[in-house]
Amino acid sequence: MILRLVVTDGSQTPAVAESVEVAGDGAVSGWRTVSDGGVGWFDGVLPPGELAELRALIASDRSAASPAPPPPDAGQEMLELTGSAPIAIAGIESPLATAARNLLTRLTDFPRAAVAVSHPSPTIARLSHRGIDPIRLDLSTVEWRESAWRGYYESAGDWSGVTAGPPDLEARPGWTYDIAIVPTDAVVHLTADFAILNGPTRIPVQAKYTPALAAP
Image (cartoon, rainbow, N blue to C red; front, side, top):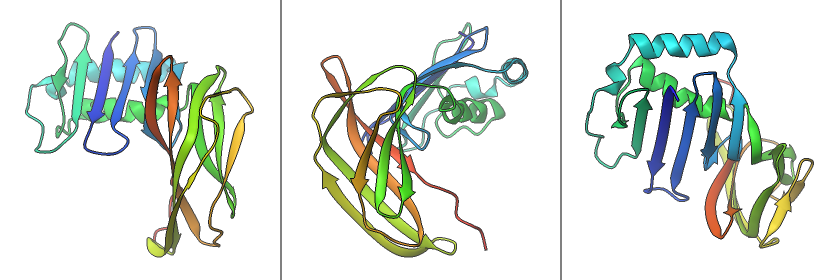
């Protein structure tokens, strides 16, 4: 392990509890609970050039690894580097701290057992399996929220609802689950709250779909 970042925030629902770890050979792995790129487990390998850039940043910028108290009411961001104990970096904006946070987003390019939400038609929000491994889900209560936008963040409406599905299912590659939503011709942002099952543990998660809006 050359870098590990653990992010937690219990002030929101569902609670954030995410991690990303990079090994010396470039292997990257982790877990996402609230994400546009999918929620669940991720595993992959960083390209050699990207790994070399990360190693150089770790070597040159350890200012991120200076203990500092987090801002009031902020979530925790704990960064661990080779040969150092985990330290809090919430509120720190050094190049290394930023790169570590960006790795959480990069992580979703390597789905292993994950679920994402999309908007394939005006009337549907679709949950889809991502990755190669199965994942168990609790869809007994799927809370969805839809925000429509015209122009640049000009609200065109907000809607929400609850859909009841299977309480315990195994999603595999190719699996999808459609949720009926309010049709609109505006740009739609979606969230879907449900749970991933890991053995006897039920983990609340939130899949997000937030396409970019055209700037004026």
